[in-house]
Image (cartoon, rainbow, N blue to C red; front, side):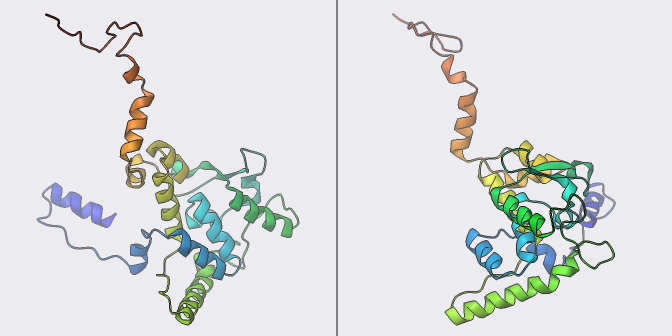
Length: 241
């Protein structure tokens, strides 16, 4: 926000130039895309409840704070193929949305639901904090310990260690994968809870095949012929001598 304000000040000739804004190291790592191999290694080394929370983040694209605040009454087991999760609040009004559960997310939540006696309400991730649910500080030690374990395992195997990331990177990874799958920007914005497609457009990069497929859906290529050899709409008649 500060960078944007300063850039506008330059644009409006209030300032001659915008000073350089340095971000915290954690902010830089938010944009990191985690590979499937890195994700599998991380989840295998992560203890509970970190492993379960990370799995949900990786398959829903929720913001970490949205996941931490989840209650059982927000989970519907019968909607869609595997059930849905209702996000009731977030950074903006667009944050309120319904997210379909993947099979992995359903298995994670259903296992936890059964372990807690099939509660109908209450926090999904309760913790002895002021809010009553897990906070970023609750997982900080587990998260750091997971990377320490991965570093030790990599050293034993003489392999390259996984570069650390923050939990928010799982959201960025999910949205990147969603964009690469061919998801349109409007759908991606709805799933992500973005208030504007400007942010969502960063994740959508249509391939050449996707462009041709989209054009073919218009059916315009079928208007050139009538089937009896007579030029159709949009096809020029040939001149004959």
